[in-house]
Length: 208
Image 1 (cartoon, rainbow, N blue to C red):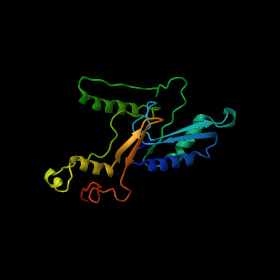
Image 2: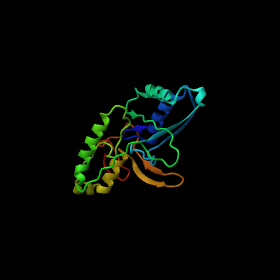
Image 3: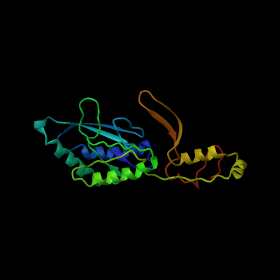
Image 4: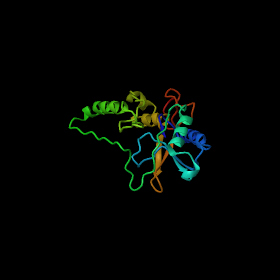
């Protein structure tokens, strides 16, 4: 599941559960295993993948064909805005990713993105090619903050403190983390309804 936007772990969990609930009564599915989070990596996953749902089908003679089951799932989740669903069959042996993989290289880095866009446009024109993704940065908002150092110093603030305040109302300020078992980030974020640059108040003394 690919999700776009500045989402917390709880918000991601709600969206993943919505998709899961629509699969629960699909004929032919025996078990469902779900993972969600902000740092799912590996297995050639795009940057914006925040949910993985693994399906265990019933015995082949007691269920519809796999293609029919997957088509049913796609139809059930098609109306969910902001969620991109991609299915992938189980791979035996080391994971190799998608059947078509194209790598671009150049001595001129600025020429790679336009070339990538052309390749992707061409792939999208081929019938039967689906679930296309690339390694370009995920589109998002870019913040440009002009800090008046003199005025900020009057309140005991500096560029670092202003940056921390912006993180509180966007992706969250990283407080720590641990790597085993799994990778976990500890972040602090302003509560919903108060995520405004003009209303934000920082515990370090930054004025709202």
